[in-house]
Image (cartoon, rainbow, N blue to C red; front, side, top):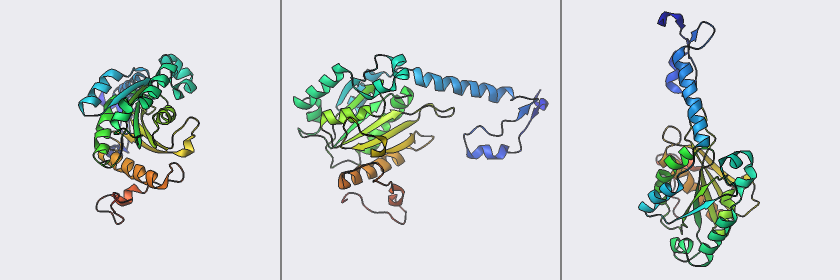
Length: 270
């Protein structure tokens, strides 16, 4: 049966990409093996969108690593509403809003995590469109970036269910944070159902728009590894604090500061 498969002359290029190229041909269709692989990837992408985030397990993992945590939910009551009503995923539920306001104002976890002062940065982990990504990639990334933030007041890590990117704005505003970094599951692709995105916003508040954010995408071992993502995030955080802005006014020149690069420099004094 293998003789019925006509190989593609681009086969050698497959070593350089995860894209579906040079799959070969069997008559007028795909060979069975790549067709089954495509169907599996499609199923994994669908599962990533619908799989709920085990927020409590994630919080336990974070707390075991020394992070203070808070749990919140968006105004979307379930996954069906979340997918059909993106606007609900951008605002907190009434109960979560009240809980965060209480934590910030009563010396709770938010104050304790930042030594009693308003935090300079709050990290939010949101399920987004891939709970797989949030559960798998967020903790290793936070560990890598925390090691670089020795002179920062870091607030509690907020674990958010049914979250869109803009949910971080309301969270950061309620906690009085100077910066909020939303770590959120990206829309799954057919080769990347577990890709994490990071969205950084200075002076977060309800109503911020996307031009006010910086984005780091495809954080995962097969894409942008944790240490490289942490380097970029530390660079952006440092310069956002210095300049008092994020978004289109803050350029990511972090590659020039990598060890061994021509423009390498110390960020600690920035």
